[in-house]
Image 1 (cartoon, helix red, strand yellow):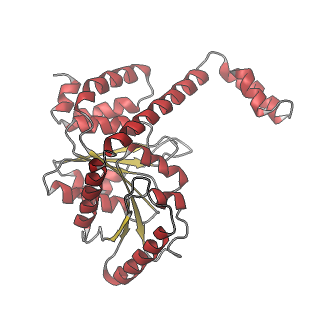
Image 2: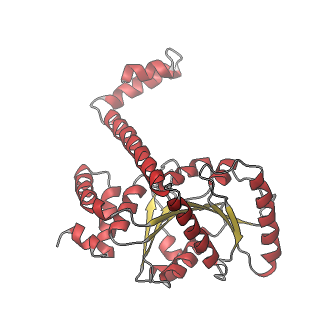
Amino acid sequence: MSLTQKILNGDRASLAKAITLTESNLEKHQEKAQKILLSCLPYTGKSIRIGVTGIPGAGKSTFIEALGKYLTNLNKKVAVLAIDPSSEINRGSILGDKTRMEELSKDNLAFIRPSPNKGSLGGVSKKTREAILLCEAAGYEIILIETVGVGQSETVVKSMVDFFLLLLISGAGDELQGIKKGIIEMADAIAINKSDGDNIKNAEKAKIEYQKALHLLPKNKNGWNTKITTCSALEKTNIENIWTIICEYEKWMKDRNLFLSIRQEQQKQWIHESIEDALKKQFYTRKGISEKLIQIEKKVIEGKITAYQASQELL
């Protein structure tokens, strides 16, 4: 049986192997990966893709496990693509999400795949899009993408998901401090986590603050009003409300023929990103380019030419 057929049959080991091939930098692995992806394409596109980002300490992994377990209890197949930060020193990766999501990782209806982001802008692996397609082909109905944190570059996740969830907590200084306005503007829903014990009142207060702040921001182009709710991933409370919001959003978008059109725009963006990546790779792997770069860099540092002139000499 081919690897593609095993993926279509829902074999998790084969799915993991295919994702590893897409992440490889070896040419022969890339060729094999692209053949598998092409075979899987007719079986993709049937999931709801959900991006989860949030401030450090917001409890993203705990939340994703709580949501994942809630969904598998509804007999839904859930894939989690947890993107770990790569080390800037040795290009390694923590890859600890399976440990943090211990309960979900044992669930037969769940698939968890930690992947290093390899320095990718936006905190999501360059190969995340391919991983999404492979998970869909394997029959996963809900794809959850956890990003490395929150920041302006994290917004790239918006370009590959249907629903964008921002996870926050109360009591982290001024409620809006440290949160980029652009991220709040793009969020389809905001969930204030850790609303449990003595923190319930603070979470409700934070919810009111964010609701006020949202009124000052431009409305979503699609007409959807960003929803704000509280939850506790630890105590698994109000998780069902977040799933209800996601389902309402999906229906809203499909009723207005926006769901598919946005995905099509995302595919166009993917083409342009792929072209840029291919051209960059082509440039840096050219024969003798490393030596030329050293010479040109020296000229720029010495002030003999501008960076623009340097780039023109090399192209």
